[in-house]
Length: 261
Image (cartoon, rainbow, N blue to C red; front, side, top):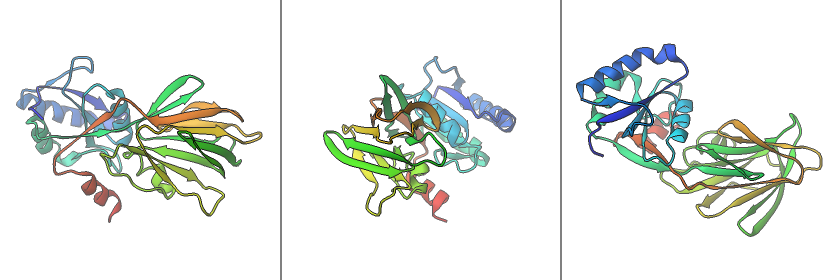
């Protein structure tokens, strides 16, 4: 990547935690001749001061805009971030000099009743009534795969596969794969298994429950509901998000740091 001349900054909602870091960032940017600009002023990169939640919001904000997002971790896990808070000055100097690797991350489009919502991490269809299971019919393209009694269904991107999907026994997808994984939550079956689906295949989910609505979430936010007989379609979206990282901070180094020890 060429050296950076203009960057925008995205802050965590915990402003008291990141306010001193913002001053440190400004000092590094000034030393390297980097202008800190607004989102609409054609930044070459977005620098996030926060954790994974702030990273997800920034990746969604700049989806399809050719603006990679790099994170300085001020959260707990910070799996999507590339820079530790203590190393900010040293590593941002490398970033501003163009020492950046960019990974394209697929997103998921969820369509319900003609409205489309985008998830960077995952889309979840779950029971709309606490304590009640649901029955979900599902189809991939023209192939009907039947129905499953369960607590819900997670549809995750590679970057989202280490979240709710992983906690439900789903596989981890390495960053860079152009695919999504489908994992049922607490299925009432000994045989149902997660499925990894490539780009170009549409998942259709229909609420086959007799009297229980479902709730549809995109990145943890409620975006729709499905009454019995209603359906949602999910697919890999047209606009990728771009994750920026240091060349030596790969998926595997982050995976080992977060889950391997």
